[in-house]
Length: 277
Image 1 (cartoon, rainbow, N blue to C red):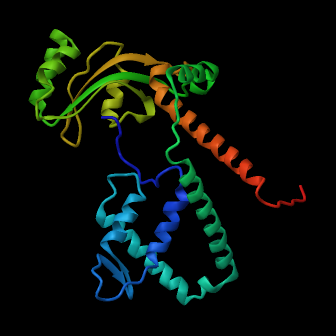
Image 2 (cartoon, helix red, strand yellow):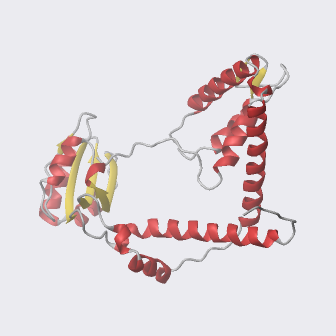
Image 3 (cartoon, one colour):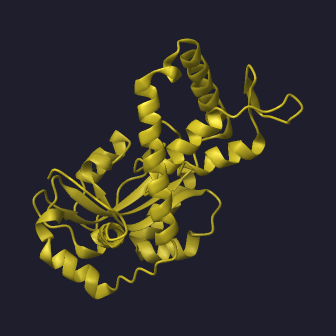
């Protein structure tokens, strides 16, 4: 199976907002009568604050218990820092002042940018791809795959037999509603280093285009069948269809950057600015 392990990440775009909110919420003190989900001394984490903290993370795999544990850890460290006098130091106060400015600036930009209609069409995507193809040169061998994973070995064997007899698409059409299917992905682009587990990786690397694997059973007791549609060698250019979403993200990021630059330039005229540069 391809490694689908999720990593905890703060929402991209306005990271400072999430970080600052986390810091401020961790310092919230409630009365003892307030309903709370966790506390450290006289600092309380309420249900509503927990929801706000959870919204700051993009990974759905980050559990409620993990968020609470993280809050408790940060609150303990914060309270210990107070005891050590850190929050009264000039270095701390300077960092807070700078953080407040950065947070306010980020929120201002978000407020003005929200609702902007970014239009990126197919031509924009293709033009970017054609002008920057070198950036999409593969640094390792990659594969275009069909892959089915089941928790039932007999089903996987039957599915493979149908693929050999009727083809992948027909086999999927006949069996796609079976409850034992854990994962089904078709025409996906996977770099060699992202193939997991090792048994599956070894099998895929030994297949030729359009070949069907044997049933691959792993240590998690899942059973996979893989079809290699194509092999892309290291040094070749990734096909447009498999980098299209990445290009769209890049163009959106560039649009955001251009908006911020134009917005700041517009503000320059409203303020008296002096610089030695």
